[in-house]
Length: 143
Image 1 (cartoon, rainbow, N blue to C red):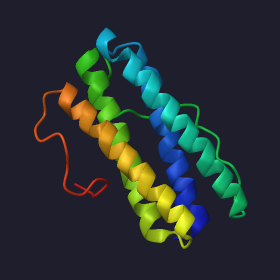
Image 2 (image 1 turned 30 degrees about the vertical axis):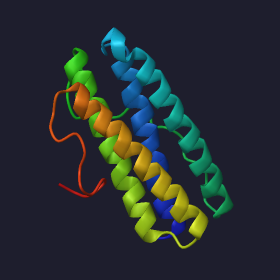
Image 3 (image 1 turned 90 degrees about the horizontal axis):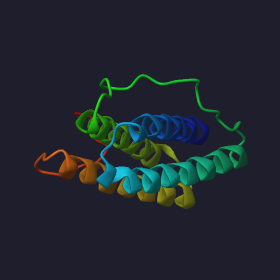
Image 4 (image 1 turned 60 degrees about the vertical axis):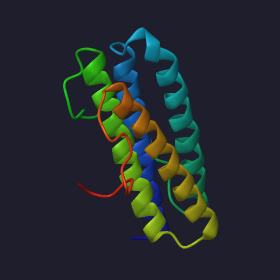
């Protein structure tokens, strides 16, 4: 996988997460609305930075799809939190792959930072759902 392929996959994961958070906004409990706003803003910043990196690497900026398939039907606070946790896990997978594939130290640092942030946000959502443990040993690993 080239730098542009790894960056493209990470941008796509960020776009999917942004979409997911948009859906969850309508269903998440009032105590988590501020968190959703904070997290979607963070995904937008990362997506924009990755698109800049993609252009610098000779690729084309990626646009969001018209829609994305969510892992669950979002109908209330619990399913909204489940969808958000899944979006974070998918982003973590993309960042883990990016970390393994890119050549430059700067892009590897960006992948580590993205992976770390996704792991923290996923842990938050697992906590909201009452899941234990809230953390995983290897964020972004399959399974």
